[in-house]
Amino acid sequence: MKAHLHQMDRRRFLLTSAAAAALPSLGAVAQASAPGEAVSATLKLHPGGAGPRIPGNFIGLSYETNELVDPSFFSPGNTGLIEQFRSLSPHGVLRIGGNTSDVGYWKPTPATKPPMTPTRKVPFGEPSSNLSFPITPEAIQNLHGFLRATGWTCIYGINLGSNTPRRAADEATYVAQVLGFTQQHGKLEYFQLGNEPDLFGHHVRDPKTWSPELYMDQWLAEADAIRAVLPSARFGLPDTAGNPDWYAAVVNRLLSLSDAPQVAALTHHYYIGGPPSNPKMNIDFILAPNARVAELAKDIAAAAARLSSGKNTSVPYRMTEGNTCYRGGKPGVSDVYASALWAADYLLDLACRGYAGANLHGGTGKFVGNSLGGHLPGDDLLQPTAAALHPHPFYTPIARIGDHYVAEPVAYGMLFAGHFAGTTAFPVDFNPGPVNATAYAATLPTGQHLVAIINKDRTRALDIDLPFYRQGPTLTAASLSSSHVQLRTPATNQKLSTVPPSTAVLLYASRSEPSPSASKPATKSEG
Image (cartoon, rainbow, N blue to C red; front, side, top):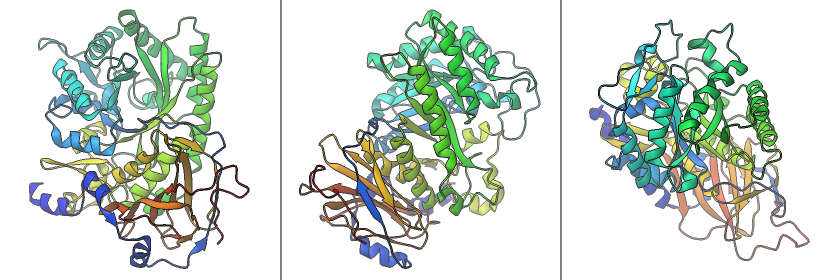
């Protein structure tokens, strides 16, 4: 791996250095991209319209619980990883869970023995029951130091697949004692019990009897054991792979209880598709509009509204694990510039649909491989000599290359979307014609308006006239398949007339922007 370190470093930049670079002009980028004929687009803003407030900690990362086997990974001494987290977001949320969360066990003392786990045939793509690994107090203490150093908080997953309520309660008590809940100015957002329980019938439960109702029986047994010793415990659920039928069953059960556990969030996962061997999983597919995003948002928003009915506060909802291609990502798709454009668009789409946040999955190749039965399927698509030139896993936002941590393309899309953290979204009317493009808008805490235009089209540019806006950070690369991504800020105040193909741009309103109450729209494309 070290033999390729220099080559890997040359093709990537740290987020901090990329964000600080100066962009000559969009015209220069457009010329380099050799776009086809530009298409006129119209964009009207409605800053007086109601929109969700996007939390300051909207941006998040998801890692396998198996990473805790190495207490030095999430620790205050891992300065390279800390630098990347802080560059990505000053106030993000780290989710610890994944497939391996249901085979780990709490080991409070060196003498603690692992639980008895039944030997079972595990299907392809799932962690082996033989993986059973310890989580130690040292790992939790170091995790606390890591969170303090990054400014991030944590969603902590606890084993539901092969655990007992007593062990779960012991682990939760220690984690809460060390991290402290965020409502008490600590670092722990909430617990999640089990990972993708809607798929338990494939690998840890009897598929003939497994159901949302049986899940809730087992979830409540574990949650109540935790609450018995930790009354302030908060939980996120059901953390499904995206099965909407589970929301109704979960909410129905919770509403039927006179003393239900405190639900901090409803959660689900989202991967565009997969596996890596699927030829459909290509750049054009991940950049195409996907109706499933809106369907999932509609289902979970409705479930959260039902659960919030009659309460003084609303139950938020969050996408806690997702990325481009499931089972570790696909080389040439998940680790190139196209994934940055996808991430920028997907995260802003969720933010404007009212999500409290999103956690894109990644981590160390070994541990993501463990979560998939010990192997990254994407490697089967590469020659051995080429495999070392890609991040492992392929979709990870932050890769470990030798002794260094580097930002992968998807992280640049996250950083782009992160500019909307702490803003209040408002509606837009955007018509890009035949061009594959999207637009989002929000109001900064200062009252200034912010607009994002994401042109995912391979060949067509967008002509748009926004006279009262200046160009901000711009996401671009030599091609959609490039592993070298740039997120740059113009050296001077520049107006925007054209958004080149495969480019995302942020625009900030100038002080001369007309008042929303003016007779004509705040922004208008004249074609």
